[in-house]
Length: 294
Image 1 (tube, one colour):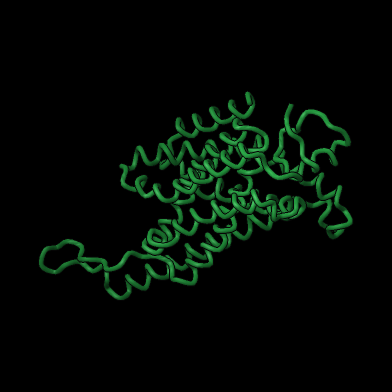
Image 2 (cartoon, helix red, strand yellow):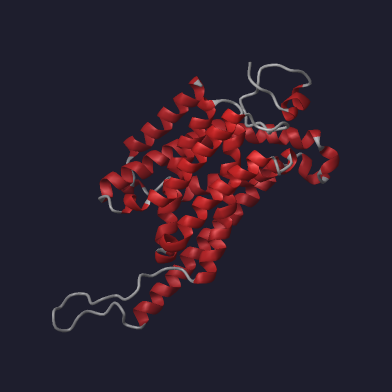
C-alpha cells in the first residue's frame, strides 16, 4: 500500500489510494527514500557539471538532444505539472486561514509570477549581451585584418556583466533547489515516479544549461554551473530535513511551474529550421507514455 502523508489525508478525508500528485512529508522519510533522493539529486547535479560536453558536439546531434529534451519537458508540463497545480490549489483552499483571501483560489497567479520573473531574467541577459555586442562592433573589435583579408581576433566573447550573471544565478538557484526538494517528495511515492521526474529534469537542465552558457559563458563555466549543482543538493537536504512547511512548498511549486513553462516556451521549442521534430516527438510521446503507464 502506498504511504500517505498528512496532507493527502486532510484533502481526501480518509486513507485510500494515493493521488497521482506530489505529496508532502508529514513524517520523516524512510531510509530508502533518503538514499534514492540523494542518489537522484547527485545525478541531477552532475548534469550541469557534465553538460559542457554537449557544446562540443556537432550541430545536428546537439540539436537532437535539445529537441528531445523539449518534447520531454512539454509532456511533463501538460501531463504532470498542470494537474499538480490543481492539487496545490486544493491545499491552499484547505489552509484558507493561513493565506490571503485573494490567493486561496488563485494559485495560478504564483505560476504567472514565476513565468514573469524568469522571462525578465532572460530579457535582461539578451539585452545586455546585445548592448555589449554593439559596443564591441563600434570599437572595431570585429574589424577585418588589413593584411590577410580575414576577420581579426574579436577579443573576449560577448557575455553578460557580473551583476546580471549573479541575478540570473539567484533565480536559477531557487529554481534548482525547488527541483531538489521535489525529488524527496517523489521518492516518498516510489522509485518509478522519482525516476520519471529525474529523467524529465535532467533533460530540462541540459536545455537550461545550454542557454545559460550562451548568455554568461566564462562566468557560468567557472562558477555558475557549480552553484546550480550545489543548489540541487541543498534543496534535497532541506526536503529530507523537513524544514519547509507543506503550505510553503505548495506556494513555491506553483512559482516553479511558471518558470518551467517559460523555459519550455523560450528554449525548448526552438525555431523550426533549428529543431529536430522527430527527436521532439520521440521525447514527448515516449515520456507521455511512461507517465500514463506508471
